Image 1 (spheres, rainbow, N blue to C red):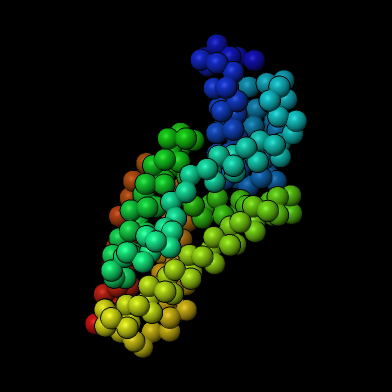
Image 2: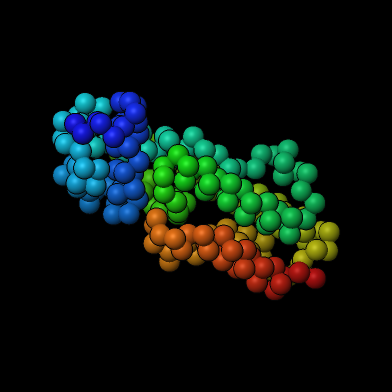
Amino acid sequence: MHTEKYKNMADLKDEIVNKSFFQFLNRGYKACSLKDLEHATGLTKGAFYYYFRNKGEILKAGIEKYLSVSGELDEAELLRIGSLREYIDMIVERKEQKAAKLQKLFDFFIIEVAFFQLVLEVGGIFPDYRKQIGELNKKRLSQWEYMILRAKQQGEIKATPDTSVLARNLMSVATSMLNIELGTENMRFVFSDMRLQFEQYYMLIKQ
């Protein structure tokens, strides 16, 4: 099973999950055959079936591993934030921290929107994950709307923009990462680009 380069069998299992998950994110779950995963990892079919009964189990292990890292703000943290500008800075900082943790876990940079797309693709197989992502996005939208309303009340930003529309637009800033290829060195520019886009939005709405 070509295990000589791994310290132990757990390392080998982790390698299967990481390299397979990269393929799922890059190409889509349905587009990846077990043969493709064998080629990507350099392992045999026997090595895969030693740990996993099927491709779906590998995917589930990858999704669970991803979801083990949380970068979300809780209600107490949200209430301590004094302004929309501070909230934006905190959002980018948390995204950077989460990305760094995930990169350490998977050995490559993961674009959040690529993960969401993968979960949507396999929603018929794993509906609970799709529901979880849906609830996460609702929570994020609610937090954005709360901070925008408070910023309007405090005179930080103009009162004219529609709160829900602005919240959705600010949430969508992260989709700029769609133009970056997974696993490339360009990833280091992702968050500086995100900050720049947020800055442009903020300049348009501030008082």
